[in-house]
Amino acid sequence: MPRIAKLDKWLTSKVNSEPKQSYRHRVLKEDSAHWPAVEEPLKKYFRRAHSDAVRRLRRLATGSLHPLRRSSSFSDPAKNYPHTLDLTTLKGYFGEVITCAVAENFDVCGHTDWEVPGFLFRVHIGLFQKLEAQRLAGGDVGVVFGRTGDDSLAFRRDAKGSIIGVLYCEAKCTADHDSSLIADAHAKLNGPGPLDILSLIEVLLDSPSPENDSWINALRRFRESLPSGSVPRCDVACYTCGKHPTRSPSWMETSRPHTSYGATGRQLESIEIHLTNVVKKIRAVYSPEGWA
Image 1 (cartoon, rainbow, N blue to C red):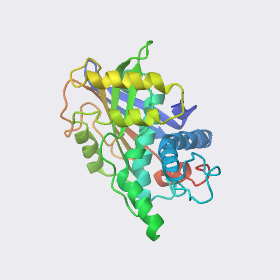
Image 2: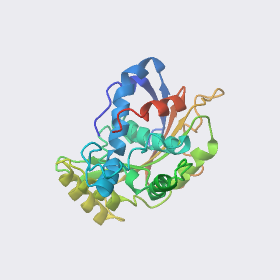
Image 3: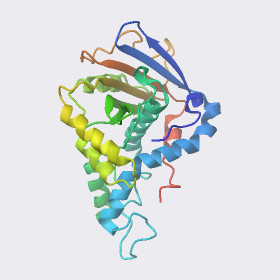
């Protein structure tokens, strides 16, 4: 995904880390004065993140990837996706996508070359079943539980295109503050993942980008090397919140991992994103305009 100009102006970064330790803590605080400069680039980033799911729905239901070039006998299955979904679902989506934007635009775990080749929103089967139920019976989609599997994945590649690092991300988002979300994000990082490399390959196989062949080959080789391959995995717990701490600068520990994180031998970076109005930002990036 393309980098977002001036994202580091909108989100000012402070990193806390201990020498020779595998834990880093980062606080990203919003500077509202720079929101107008990043709003449109962020909207485009979010639309690209969901573009695979939109293309897949249209191709399956109408035989066309474009809503204006389909047969008039077919309705657009993506007309309500994702901008009309309930706020709880959009919070989850917002957390995942903003985590990837941070990974690609900041030196997460000490590296500045993370790449996100694709997003896994197409595998949110429960959501698409509810959208189909809405088409058949009307009414609201309602709250949809989060999808299973990996939240977000980013990778580092060498000059030959081989994967040399994987960033395994768990994202949480709340308009207020909820310490249980922080604990849950860190606990989920204890698992073996990544689990959805094949799904990511499927996303890339269906994408029109000519650059995806090299990604597909690299991901296949990477998957075959698991679980005992030499590619290092770094973990990220990213927590986006609307309520800011007052007694201390952060909600998380700055010098040691959360007690729910029990993995060993991996670099962990815990990230807090403090926004002044989470719901407003979600409504902005998921505004109805531009999803056609």
